[in-house]
Length: 235
Image (cartoon, rainbow, N blue to C red; front, side, top):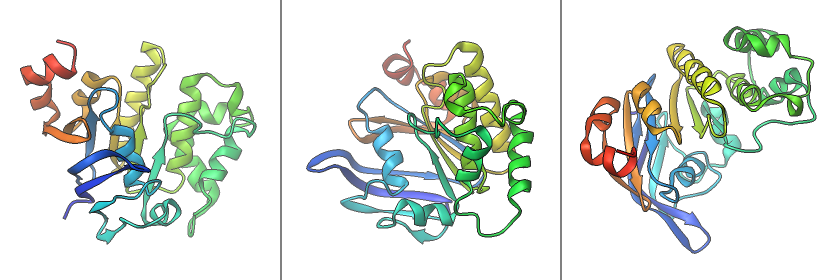
């Protein structure tokens, strides 16, 4: 059974239909990259999976639970966390306070142990733990956002454009951290503007266009497909 299954989901905003009978799966412990042009429905898919939007048709199952009508806070308690592209940290709070906010649904376990696990993953955050998140660089803020989501030790982490507007050096650093997170056993579903690099590290990928799943395969298969390269990878 897949960890996450999106089964023929249709949905969007108000009367606007963005997703059209879209299906996809994420297995435990794998990285799945979602690529496609602007307006393809990638971020809408993320929000629908996480309960910020609800499908009009179809079903979403996570870890054996039908979450199609669940609210986001209910989904978090099942083991899924989401890092949006923007507004993903509390800018006036320190790094440590952001992490503590991320642990709002922590039922069991020691808060300090959870923070140390994040600091081991992101050593820079421990050095800056007393600094306000709003005074950090874009890459550092992204690490704070990811660290906050990891406080709950999720089964699945959703990342929406984690390297947007970052320098090439910081892009490489964020991708390296994503790989390390996955190595701990956390599955990752990632929407990423850097399609080539995301497919290189992904176990599998999906190509979205006009709210539909146009193509799927392993990351390598999609990278080597000439049609995917021509239409979605810039050559």
